[in-house]
Length: 106
View (tube, rainbow, N blue to C red):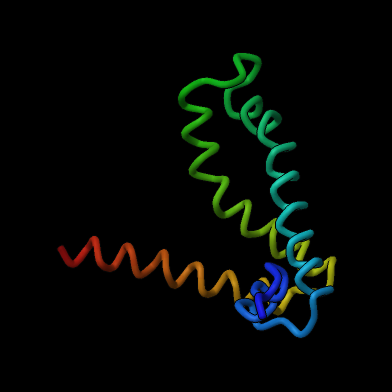
């Protein structure tokens, strides 16, 4: 029997129901849209009226990763999935730290 994509996500993420999968996907979607909506104001903040300058873009891409993670945790909390996203963030940060450790040891 072939499993649906939602069932595969439920197993991979170790969630208790398909409804929880839907909520997790909704949190990712809300976070993505929020980052999309704050991009222009952030670029204007860094570059003023000039808008999208190279410096503003570099600052945006440096700051967007931690900002995305914070927004993800906020939406996770609001949708009742904070524990899932907290564990997700810890795994993500440990992978990032592992990449930097490998680079330093070369």
